[in-house]
Length: 214
Image (tube, rainbow, N blue to C red; front, side, top):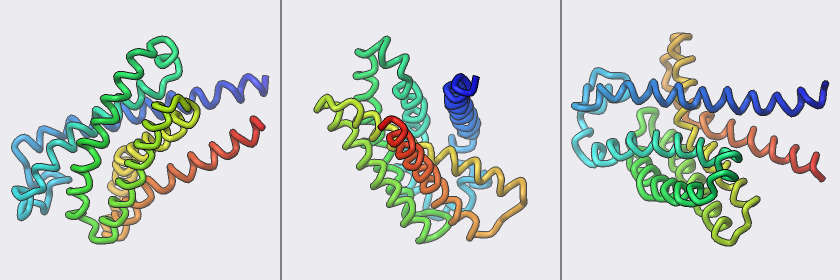
């Protein structure tokens, strides 16, 4: 019985996490009605009117399109069942994901980072997030080309966890709204915590798993 519980619990946690990612991303996408045309009274665009129609808009729109695509594709690509049953589609969707992340999402996010609402320290956090996500994605792609599939899965899992920082940031922001926290320091903390904490949890879990297997 304990063994069965040990096997089942991670699957349940993965399912709950996937559903949470889908739900949060879906709610964010429903808010896109405030972006076409831009509503500067909406939460995210509030206070951005002075610079929105400069380079920011050319990064903003590609980013909000490529973001959900990369999150939904990532869920499919991380599925072992999908990979085993449809290896051809896994490879092709993996290429689409790589192009989407490296060619659209990360460059546009980098441009937006320099106008982070939480200030220059938040910008540093977003720049580091971009660099780590790009590195993980490139190394994951390279490992796949070299047919080192275990290494490939590890790097792409890191990449996806970092991509999910947008989801975690929304969740933290929602908690802040419920608690009526409006301090700029909270937004800055959320910016860093949204990717640092999940990455640490992933690495600790991976280390524990490798020790158990050895």
